[in-house]
Length: 486
Length: 40
Image 1 (cartoon, chains in turn orange, brown):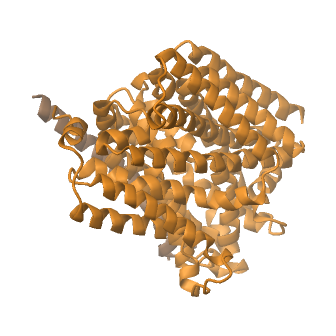
Image 2: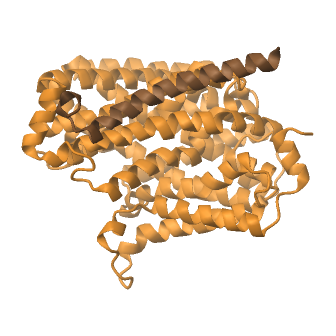
Image 3: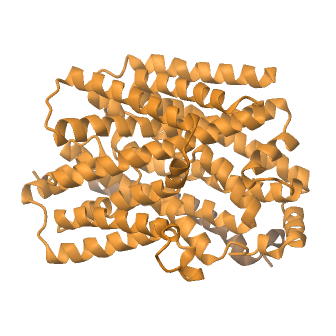
């Protein structure tokens, strides 16, 4: 236990120190929200990895590997190809240029600048803000559960310890503190995952022995799609891979990189760093062999950690899981607070604030949102847990197509973008809620496994295409400014 | 049968990962060459 405490105190103290150092560099709203567009490729790339893979991915990914076997490796491969490398190639440069041309610091701000639509700005800010809070609650819960299992601490203390440290460095240091702590957190997380994978594969007798032993338990644990089935595997891979293209806490890394040439080196670094995505699924499958009797699949990774790592390794792994959760939570906190103040309070409700008052308001908002998330996470109601599964679907359905079309197709209609958001979100929510609505007919087996994200984004795509052909493009001035032609 | 006694369809996940890393390097190289051509 003492080793765990030493590692955590040193680690959390270091994060708080980064927050203090960066507080001196956050002098304006632009510094606080997007680091004054001054971040280098290494920090941008690795902080992207840290914000992408939360504690939910490590613990939840391991649970999926334990339950569904090696077919889940495809989820990790999808995370790297679609969720990371293609996102950087397709979105990175244009987002960097357009947001600078439009002077936008938030995704809703980009929608306003690109389409001239105040409604799209407000809807995107509100839907994204609300569902990111719900997502944050689940991230905090994941961290606290890990504290509970590995350190035998009460659940509430895990929530409080992680919540307070994140709130401190985020509110004090702003975006720069978030990206620099995320950089450190990515390194800790990668080291922890590599260590656990190496030690657990050694324990099971190597990769071939793992496959042979899984085959004897159930050949479905080795085949693809195996025991999961195509509908579940494809839906889940899409939501956690293509879904990133609409997640503002990840897209903000493109706004804040120093210049678009740095995206080149960043793409190589982020691809290699993101490759650890396969490891939670692989170690989850190892856990199926080594710890087959568990009351819940969520215990697979913590139980495996206890079995194969000594105290120092276990402490490093705990730090890695906490790192994954903290970096995601902090990144989300900055996004919600800057969007609520800038998009909703100032531009939506028409309030005027001086730059200094705006900076203060964003700091206070990040504290308020953090405290609310922390209080909900202390005793999350069932509804929050249900909505967590919806959060990525709703956020991605809101932002994905209006962003992608806005970057690549000058003709895209503002009304089509707004209706794509509204119908996409409604379809995703309705689809996810379908089994809980008693009077609706039961969905056939193959359709029942399809996630609301797939339905929401499909509906949103159709609406934006039809609406753009039928409607009018954005005002010429907005389009020219976005493309930098004036 | 693919390496490690895996079926090819499951081993494909590792091939996609390797292909993605190669894609990132190739894209960066092409982008660099394009930039140099634009500058000259």
